[in-house]
Length: 315
Ligand code: GDP
Ligand code: ZN
Image (cartoon, rainbow, N blue to C red; front, side, top):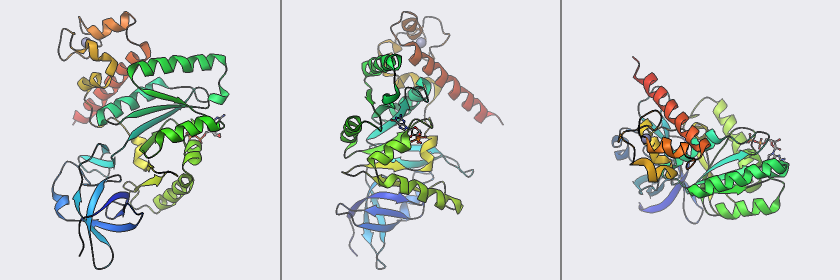
């Protein structure tokens, strides 16, 4: 049987994987037994987005024998009482958080949490501010403030409106050829944007819900929706819980790039930068050298991680 056939996992049910080759051919594949034994902390050894090699079988299916090194992987805590983490997608080029300025208003906490997650997973983030067509003067001023705030830290921010072909075109161009994850609060226009840039998205979303209704595979079903001119969007129910699985409270400061010049100047090396004496980050915030909204997000994230840690440690 021919082996070493290369492709990418574009769909997964947990047991079966659809692997797509460069020429577009799709093959249903199973996984060689050896993978099930290693990486015991994960409940699944491969996920959507993985580049693999497989061997063709007599019945036309494939058997995955090699998994290529990943650029990154998004995980969440395993469900159904299983221990460890479950990988939900790998090799993500862009983590995209969609927000709007009004209806609903921009949420700095949500945005910063997502940016921390991207830092932790080593995913390049992109902030989209949608519905700019609705923005009046003060909302547009706020947009400018946000652009300055985030671009100074090194984060890219793109304004968008589904009614503006030019802005949509710029977005399409930016994500061309990339594997993207889309996240955002409800009502900001994620589905509208996806429908505008990936015509297959709508169909896929409804397919998934009818699938889920059958009650099987719900938590592991995932797929890549192809973009018109190359690239893909990760579509999985788990993506909505895209949380801070692997981050400890004392590591959150590492995920705020603008803290970099101050981090090592605190009196205590394990400083959490909230109420400790001689904290360089608190001081930088007091002096206006760090943004108040970013510092508030930092404190909120640390606090919520501490709470979830202590609830886990409870007997
Ligand atoms: P989702 O919950 O994030 O998927 O948001 P939807 O795509 O369902 O959009 C929520 C509402 O906002 C719908 O009524 C859309 O028509 C509307 N909407 C989405 N994008 C825009 C936009 O760029 N401008 C305006 N004015 N409305 C939009
Ligand atoms: Zn400190």
